[in-house]
Image 1 (tube, rainbow, N blue to C red):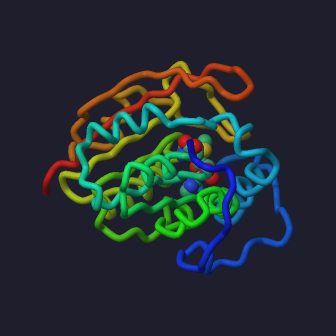
Image 2: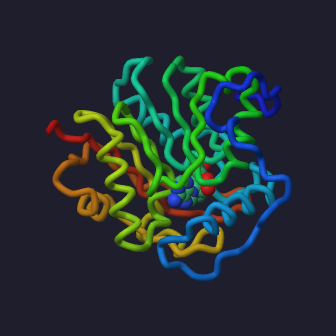
Length: 242
Ligand SMILES: C[S@@+](CC[C@H](N)C(=O)[O-])C[C@H]1O[C@@H](n2cnc3c(N)ncnc32)[C@H](O)[C@@H]1O
């Protein structure tokens, strides 16, 4: 079980080069045009500042399905792994405990990354924390695994999806693995006040295109801390060699 507390430790990550916002800047977003810029990060920062991490609807004590699919990728412990839009997820805690040594967590909400880093204490110093919008971030092309749970489905506009896919193709090595989970076809139509695009495995395969081969899929029900069930589509893809 990961620790829920810890010290902030030495300055080693990109996250800590960014001064935290002194005041919450929560501003609910009521419409979507696929290009929120600053407003989108303010929205997500506000979500994390206004709720306990254990109370957000997507909270998982143990990210079991993600861990199972990652295990099946057969990675080496020094393979580079990125959790895209990882927020304050405990996935990174479990991957550290399993011995992975090259972990990156990105998220548009700095407050979420700061919470995860604080929770991990000294162990958090081994992680590269990268605040930023995944549709605009500059990720090095060295990752063997790209993990995304409940982020891609927020991209309801084609140009935002295209930018995400461009980042994915840049960052993930040929032969690398993509583990992705979105709301399923029977899942919610909105989350955190934002509309989502729901997918089944075929829909995800189609949006990813011929450069990715579907290697596993499962539909899972997530029970929120408030007791509601949400249908998720989990998929594992392999990026084909160039
Ligand atoms: C539903 S939460 C899921 C968090 C985490 N993946 C998990 O499973 O616990 C969605 C996350 O995506 C982040 N996010 C939303 N849009 C993003 C974007 N364009 N770029 C990066 N992160 C984004 C949010 O800040 C939030 O942490």
